[in-house]
Length: 149
Image 1 (tube, rainbow, N blue to C red):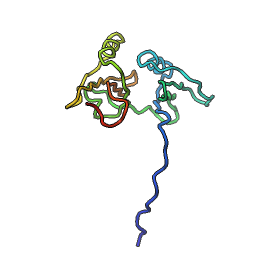
Image 2 (image 1 turned 30 degrees about the horizontal axis):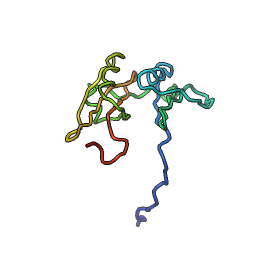
Image 3 (image 1 turned 120 degrees about the vertical axis):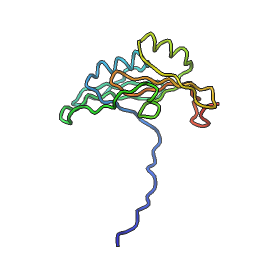
Image 4 (image 1 turned 45 degrees about the horizontal axis):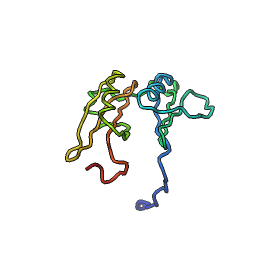
């Protein structure tokens, strides 16, 4: 007979370090995150491939990584209307004023969709970066729970 499943302790993680995005155009994607979402460039080690490291204060890091040509074509998620992003892969950021965000997205020419979290006053705004990665911003509380009031 086969042995039963092994039960092991959870890995003792302490924090999220970074999120990465793979791209064929590091300069374009890096500039977009700096210009539209306010990330700032930070020092990156001299890896043997292109990339950029960005930070959104105080502790969110985004690593833009040059696609590896030996891995085949870059896999992308088909772009659908922004209103569908909430049920697909996306990054989410907290903002102070959704109305300011909406004005800035219009000024940058970024198509977006606004949703109100049911039973709350929290608004979510969904849009894409230039590579088609889903982004969400909202006036969420800084604590994870309770979500919104």
